[in-house]
Length: 345
Image 1 (tube, helix red, strand yellow):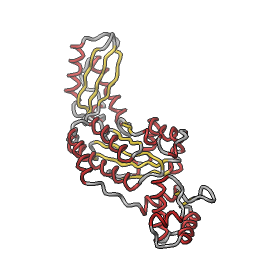
Image 2 (cartoon, one colour):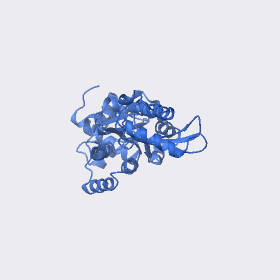
Image 3 (cartoon, rainbow, N blue to C red):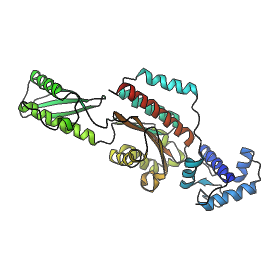
Image 4 (cartoon, one colour):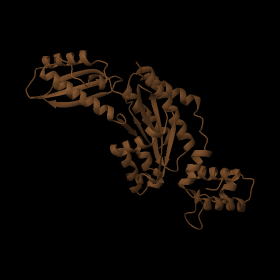
């Protein structure tokens, strides 16, 4: 597209700022009066018309003002927007909250999702830190009912996997505990590749549990991310763009349907963003129809070789990008520090 002049870039940023605040089309006269511009309404109107011809603005009705297009938002985010400064008092308060629960991984994700939703006034998502390679830490076998046993597998880094299994015969709890101890001694600290060959001397029961453990760890390694924590869904429902409900339901389906969310994470964050880097998807980028009215701001956090996760915000395209990008970047840094301090061996 045509290169913008400094004045056009300035006016585009004002239109976006005003539209984010008001959710109504922005007119030239209003802009001159609101921002005390040192130019006439006619000059502003001509520049807005030029921005419209370039595809950065659109005019919903002939008599209406202008609103940003997807391309307008993309140009703004990529070249114009400035991240806002998060007040030091807010940074200290948030950091202190995380410090108080630094040993509670589940608590991190819930707190991060809550803070993101509150700060962005949009929907937030945070995935639990997920090891790049699962390593065995501990297993427990708990007798349930009849032939059923609860298998609790704990991986290095704190990830917990649980499943009920049905044994061919009833096994007493003391025997289950002995079996678990044998596996704990044989597999501690090992990854899938290191335990892919069954240790010698296992009983039939131990061999069965070993194979189930290997299956669980293999599945864990194939997962893109850990458990997803969501917050602030009502914030999206309250936005005027989604007052009819249908657009909001389509957007929230992305967060509620794990396969679709995994696809977004795999195509964007995992393949296009370094740790700490922020990536912005606007209008679904022509790939995800359900996000045609939305934007997502995402970042990875964690420590390479230990565990990584994702956090982000989903809201209308009419979002305060500077502030949203700043809070996402700040929290990804905090969570990366926590992963490094508490999970790195």
